[in-house]
View 1 (cartoon, one colour):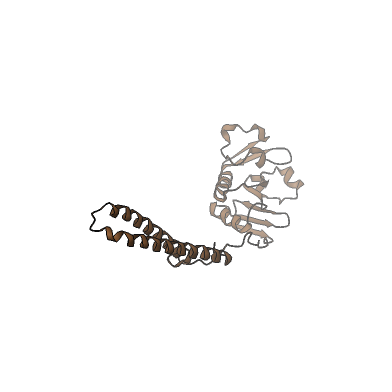
View 2 (cartoon, rainbow, N blue to C red):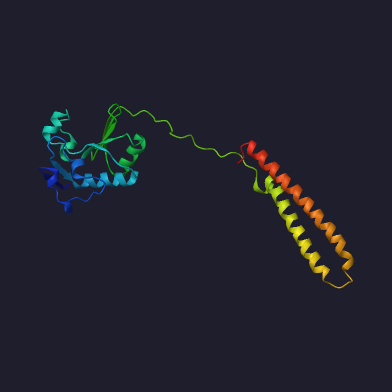
Length: 224
């Protein structure tokens, strides 16, 4: 596994840093700023960030031997090799995070729910620590209210009746104008068309009333 060591993270050339979601300062030892870059580990960390689609808060990356002793780290801690990271769980579901970390190739897992972070490293495969408590679902799944089938909706039927009869009334009016200009042989029909127009208008008003009543009733029952 190729590694590169720098006395301070500020010494890292821009051209040598190819992990856009992280900075050398985030990965460096917190004690004196020293940095050891393991490219395989950093590639997997970036892949994990891309897979989760949200920031990874690195609580601890590389540790110098002095820093590792100061924080009580294991004598053979993978942090000193640059192949381990402690990631805060404040913005992650631990189960989802662990599954994604395994998917991109991390093998070692340490869980620290009291401190709110998870340790991940390149291996060997092992796990330790207390399990994180199951988190409640943040939002109750929304169940859409029961709705009437569109073809059976009273609102639709009432509105449809109003629309059809309104068109019918308009059609009769147009027909009346046309017939008024025709030959005298059909003039006797004109009075009947006038009556028919008023019948259509009456049915249209009834349809509109039914539609309004059904809409109000649906609203009262929560069928919006």
